[in-house]
Length: 191
Length: 353
Image 1 (tube, rainbow over the protein chains, first blue to last red):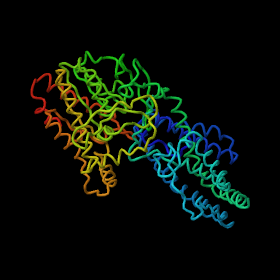
Image 2 (cartoon, one colour; image 1 turned 30 degrees about the vertical axis):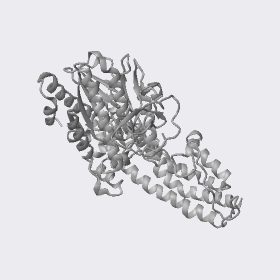
Image 3 (tube, rainbow over the protein chains, first blue to last red; image 1 turned 180 degrees about the vertical axis):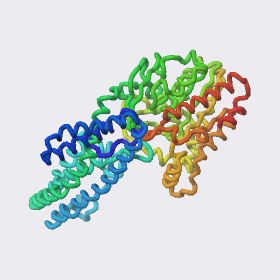
Image 4 (spheres, rainbow over the protein chains, first blue to last red; image 1 turned 45 degrees about the vertical axis):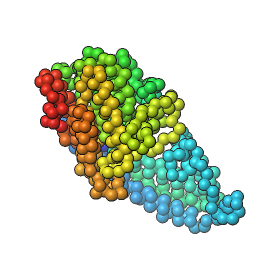
């Protein structure tokens, strides 16, 4: 619901395309209306409403143009997402990490029970971690949601500062796309 | 503590810098939000898959009977479908009245399209029953064939084999969390046996991330997996052929390629998954299954030469309406050759595939 890029696979779905164009018209009308209102133009509401209808009606009469417009819009959105992701990650890397890095590192010595080296004996992974490379199950992630999982990790591991990254991570999650080379096969929830 | 305070101040400053980025993105976000919201309001409510399928102690799972509902799909719009009193797709024709039965997985079920656009419903001149269930491997299809064999006499049995996962999943005991019958090799030779004693409603104790693309790439190259997969496939087609022969039915194998095997970008992608990309041969499954069918005297149709990229849905591995239409034409062609001409089907199908 909060993604920036529209679903690529729906570019041929008639209802989806019509809704897309109605949304575009509404947004255009809204932005023009607000701009006129800020400029103290008294007919801002009328202009906004007329613009919405001017945009909606011709395109609904010529539906064939919609897939093209849909894909063009998504292409521009993709460029925006690419650039915005870089900038957001840049903000995290060059501002937050630099500030945190200034405080130095806490050296945690975790000598194993053998008291000989820092090596840890490998244990049998838990069942829910069986398919992963590391002893980390993903079940709790789906149950609690990634935000809560992240926060509880930050709290438990003594990295509370990492919670300050959350707004940026949430923003980055809006930039995800639904495009894949192939759909994952395990699409079935059977019984 | 100092670190957290510093991070908080830096994050506030960072958020201030991010405001212009967010403002520029607002129109995109609002448009997507409203498009999603309006579409959610317009679309029919779909039934969750858990309510459409049920556990079965032999086959692992099956469709529920007498359904008339919308099913949700992951990346594309949902579809409307019905099931008959036995749980098979479509409520117009039942198995007994049909003259062609299509066994297989979600392709045979007609996943992704409404009943009226499903390959089984498109041609009024042939009574096709789609006996497919989502997620089935070839072992499950064979078990159904054996169970329904008393009523197969005089019918044309079409077995859809999807290269995308069927060949690999014949060898494994689970589909995600669900237990399914599979085949086990005996003593490392060409002998196989069907295993189903692990079937129960309990969750399979572990699942791996989906690796179908890698497995398909391996099956499309000379590899250990490929040898095992085709050996198991030969065993299963042989069993199917015996079942049909004993029942007095004619079996035809129809091989369905994964869309990646058709798209040039898909071929590149699949080859890149192998340690030796040069060993990748997208036609290897067709060659091998054709060899098997020749050996067992089973007519074979390879859809890879017939289907096009546009016959598949965007964002899903299944056929589009167009793909279903094309498959319906092919099935009608097979039907005509078998029933109308009364000719040797195996020889005649060379012109189809």
